[in-house]
Amino acid sequence: MPSVLTPLFRHPASPLQELESPTLRQGGVRLLIKRDELLRMGPGQALSGNKWRKLQYNLQSARDQGLETLLTFGGAYSNHIAAVAAAGATFGFHTIGLIRGERPEGLNPTLRFAGACGMELQFISRSAFREKQEPAFLNQLQEQFGPFYLLPEGGTNSLAIQGCRSIVEEVEQQTPYFPDYWCCSLGTGGTFAGIITALNGRAKAIGFSALKGDFLAGEVAQLLQSSPLWGDKRGTWEVNGDFHFGGYAKFEPYLIDFINGFYQQHGIALDPIYTGKLFYGLFQLIEQGYFPKGSTILAVHTGGLQGVPGFNERFGKLIEMRP
Ligand SMILES: Cc1ncc(COP(=O)(O)O)c(C=O)c1O
Image (cartoon, rainbow, N blue to C red; front, side, top):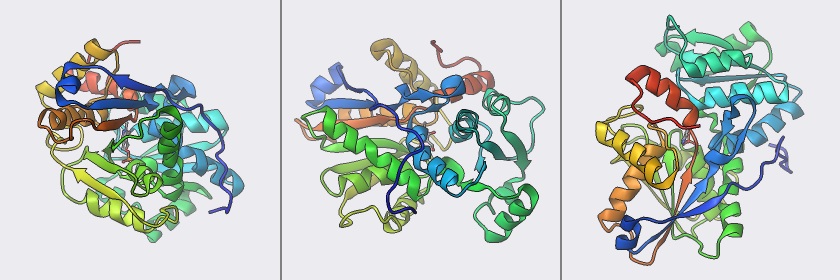
């Protein structure tokens, strides 16, 4: 890691919006939303949400090393794949996406978009996908594709964690109410780890897991321990595993109702994989009285809206789409 980090691109601070709702009034809490989904850039505006923050230092690192190709991994509907493809098209990198599973007969909107951005798509078996961090497998990829800058699945590494710290830094500038609770959705844990390191014990962080299983707290702990950015290693945080709806991309009709209702009430679109589950869970906790009256809660809207057309194509227009 270079001693002075510079991002390849800078973005404006995303808006911070206070939400009004009867649930919040009854719970006696203030809810601020960090609207990273409104940070949009590149073709299809797919460089958005937490992806913008996670990629900014990584792209500069690739440039510094003289690497012209970005290689990464993801599922067929991955927001990260879409963002890397858009970043490659924007900043002049060749991109290779290794996609989990067999090539489908017709590509979904995410993969069509990635291909249109110039991403070379390779489909690999689920067992090969599990090898994605193994040196032997990565060497084989070097032989196949030549030199590349490796972005892990979901884009999480120490430079991504560095990029996500700016969520906290921006909020500190945007409101006199330093939030007591900082909430975000959890996939690989990089965004959450960035928030925890920047908070450094000043408030509690809660990560809402989008995945089933209790492994994420361990992964976050590992990311934190290996992060050179975590000041004096203080922090109060927990992973909430109660709102994954059965696992990644699983859902129930009442989640869809919540997402559509949230848009009608507040004009804020949510995705069904990450942010819909985050806000659903958060409102449940507020109703259950989890947060003491007088608390200020911050929730990060990490984006993910590029995935909605693919979700609707697969499951039948469940989520009302707006421009
Ligand atoms: C929209 C969205 N929100 C949240 C996350 C979770 O972020 P992280 O992987 O850093 O935990 C992801 C990706 O993984 C995402 O695409």
